[in-house]
Length: 635
Image (cartoon, rainbow, N blue to C red; front, side, top):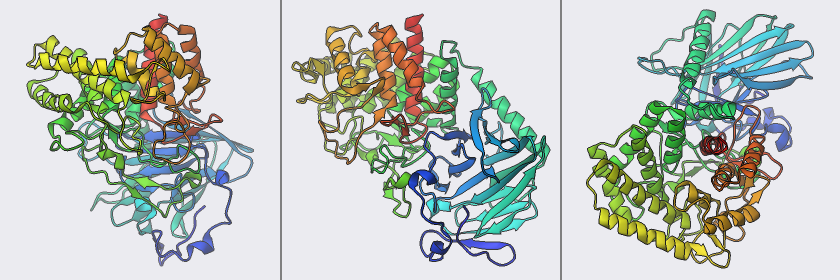
C-alpha cells in the first residue's frame, strides 16, 4: 500500500523520514494483525549482484534491499516495518490468486509464478553481476513481468524509504520512468509503462497480453549520469549474460554426490553473499530478523566474522572454487596484516565490515517496529569488540587448509601470522565471551580453549610441512598445556561429557566440532559419551539447540530456538562416529526445513518456522561440509 506525503507540483513529490510526518496517520490503513502484514521469513527468495542483495517475497514484493552494498542503509525495509520500511511490489490486480517461486536452474535468477483466475504470469527478478573490465558497477535491479496465458493485470508500487526510512526524498516523473532523490542516494526507475505519483510514491497499472512482457529497471544513478531508457534488447542481453555468469561459475564445482541440488544451491547462495571487491562473505544479508518472534534477540549480521573463515574456505575448496577461496584468504591476511595495537581483546576483532573496517558501532532504530513487532531493530554490532579467543583457531585452520590445497602462505604473511600466534600463546588461558557472543560476562569456555589448541596445532603443522621458522618447542608445550587443561577441566566426570565452560554441567553444541577439528578421535569413549549426552539433551528430531539458556544464563532476554548449523555439525559428528543410518536420516530431515527454494535462516522455531537473519551463510557452509563428509562415509 502506498501512503502519505502529498504530491507536489508538476509531477514532483516530497517524502519525509519518520520525523515530522503528521499526515501519516491520515493515510495509514486500519491496523492489521502482524501475521497479515508480514510474510513468513521463509517465504522469500534472494537475488544479488555480488555487492548487495534483495529479498523477494512469494507475493512479488521486494521488502529488503540495501544500496549500493550489503551494509549500506536500506532502501526497502518493509520486512522490518510494514508501514514505514518501504517496498517494491509487483502483484496481480485481482483477487483469488496464488503464487509459486523457483530459481531458473543453476542460476540466482528468481521466478515468481502467479496463478490467477484468468491465466498465468510470472515475474523474473535478477541483478546483473559485475562485468569484467567494468569501470563502475551499475547496481541494477531488473524485474520483468511475463504473461504466460491470458491477459494479465498487475499493480506495481515503488515506495523507497532511504536511510532506514530516516531520510527525506523527492520523486520526479521523467520521459523514461521516474527519479528518486535522497541526500545520499539517487535511483532511477526505467519502464515503458505509464506511471503516476500517488502519495509521494510511484504506481503503475499494467495489462500484459499472453506472450508479452513489461519491465521495470531500478538503477543507482551516479552524480551527473543521465537517465537513459532500457530497451527490450538491452534487458534480454542482461538476462542472457546473467544466466551465463551463474552457470559458468557453477561448472567449476567438483561435487557430484547424493545431494547435488542442495549443495549447489548452498554454493550459489554463498556466492551471492560474497562482496566481490574484497572477497569477504557476510554472515547474512539482513539485520534484526528475530531469533524469537516479538523478542529482542535481533542483531545485524551484514558483516564478516573471522570464525566463518575456516568453514568458508573449507567449503569453497572442497567444491573446487579456488578463486573465491583465494580472494577470501587475501581478505583474511589483510586483517592480521593491519591488526590493531594489542589491547585487552587482542590484535584481531571477531568481525569486520566487508571493506575491512573495524568500527561497527551498534545503534537502535526506534522508529521501526521490527519484524512482526520484534524490537529493537539494530544496525551495527557491539559484539565486534568482544574477546573471543576461538577466532585465532578458525583463522589458523583456514590458512592451514588454504596452504594444503594449493594457496600457499608467503613469507610476509607467515611473519605476521606468527606475531598473532605469539599473542595467543601468552593469553589463551583467560575467560572470554565465547563463540555465541553472550552478554552475560566472560567464562572459561571449553570451545575457546579448543580453538586455541587448533591455532597452535595448525601453526605447528604448517611450519613442519613448509620448513618455516618457528619456536616449535614453545608452541608444542603450549599446545600440550591446552590439551591437558581441556581434558582435565573441560571434561565433567559427573556428566561424562565435555561441558560448555569449566566448573559447570551445561552442555554446548559448539563442542560437536571436537572430532571435526581432530582434537579427539570420533570414536573416543569420552567423545561418544559426550555425543550421546548432546543427543539426549540438546537434540529434538534432528534440530539442535546451542545450549540450555535457562541452565546457563547468557545475559539476554527471551528464549532460544534451534540452530541449523549445529544440526549439520551433529550430522557430521554422527557420520564420523560411524552412525551412518542415524546421520543420513537426520540430514534428510534437515533438508525438509529448507524453504521452497532451498534457503535456510539461522534458526528453526518450535513449529518448524525459520527464524533469525536470512539466509545464513554459516548454515549453508555447515550443510556443504556435512553433505561432503556424509557422502565420503557412505561411499
